[in-house]
Amino acid sequence: MSRERKIILTIDQGTTSTRALLYSFEENKILNIAQKDFKQYFPHPGWVEHDLEEIWQTVLAVCAEVMKKSNLSARDITALGITNQRETIGAWDKSSDQPISKAIVWQDRRTSDYCSALQQAGLEEKIKAKTGLPLDPYFSASKANWLLEKIPSARELAQKGNLCLATMDAFLIWRLTKGEAFVTDVTNACRTNLYNIHRLDWDEELLDIFSVPREILPTVKRSNAFFGEAKIFDHPIPIYGVAGDQQASLLGHAGLKEGMLKITYGTGAFLLMNTGTKSVTSKHNLLTTIAFQLENDEKPHYALEGSIFVAGSALKWLKDKMEVIERYEETEEFAKSSPDNHGVYLVPSFTGLGAPHWDPLARGAILGMTLDTDKKIIARAALESLAYQTHDIVKALNDSGISLGELRVDGGVTVNDWFLSFMANLLGLTIVRPKNVELTILGATFLAALGSGILKEKEEIQKHSAAQKTFADEGKLAKDALLARWQKAIESVRDFSS
Image (cartoon, rainbow, N blue to C red):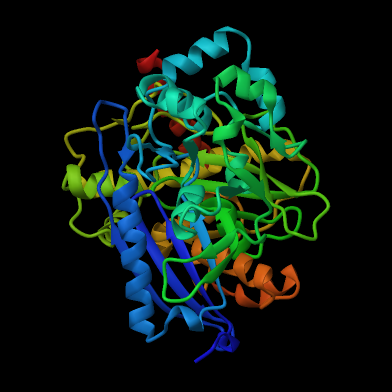
């Protein structure tokens, strides 16, 4: 076999698991996927951590497994792509190659007080103007500051030039290239609160605010650039495609043009709308972010983004913690068993509320319960909560001046027809579920194909993205009454946390 087969190996380093995929552009199909979970660490309430070494071992394991399944070696692979959980940040010693602590995950809220102090100092608007992001523990900068201030060896290593501080993509590239490349891409850099999305560089004023030295941060490249050679295999593989998971998903949906809209339901849920080469500022607390920038693009494409912190993890909570369901498929069965929600609303703000509320202190609640409330009703309320939160973000997009068309969806919960039908009626939009639901990892695959020359133009992505089923608004849902009650539920959890 040879690289003429046009095969891409892609790593998807997610929040709860790492996956690897092999895709053949010659056959236009996924050859194999491998997946391995890793441990979540919760050392204190509101803290979430990952072990970088454990994650690295999962990367090695899934790459080896997917190549073995496909009977391929590194010599058969044209290029390697990477997509990753965003905002999660780690630090390691350049000389020893060892992490100095566990990575701080995007869900972590330990820096809430620090962010509040910066807000009280009047710095939020300046930060938002430069980065498109609010001042929130969700983003990487406050986590970076915590690592530098709280880990005893961090500042000393930084002063000696021996510290690397970066998001997960940069850590993986560092290990894959055996320390030869310390690089990231624009879609990851723009999620840190340290990167100026207009000047396209680390911002000196922001670095000063968060006390983060530029020297410990990676070099930023375009998403289909050459990132170095992976040298951990029996033959080097060039790394050509890197993107944060949600931007990768947008590309997987072929969201290349202004107005294209997608949402991915994973641990959290993330809605992105391509706004073209113009950055649009939201009046309703949506994020302005970089969607992608390719090697031949003079300007990046920007996006408006709304983040739901708890989506699939709400269903996981129902299953693992509350034992309301035994199988995820039961949520659809339970939802169909009742004509309505019996007035019960679940607000899954277990790690705060994301867009458009941005309330880090809000906590989860189930409201409207009576003695008739059973597990079926609670399961339905959990599903409905995902649709209500999606509605709040879509409504906030109305100030963009860009007309909304269909909403493309992916992620585990989108196999649920009841959920997508309910959401189509709630939003008044056509919902499109693609034939291939692996959109995040495929987006990075397409980037690697563009970088390596397998795909010549980004428009070629479109032929790899086909619809499997659409769900239309049937006009039968009493959505105004449902949404009014949902807003009361939101207000209740916010009042309780204040």
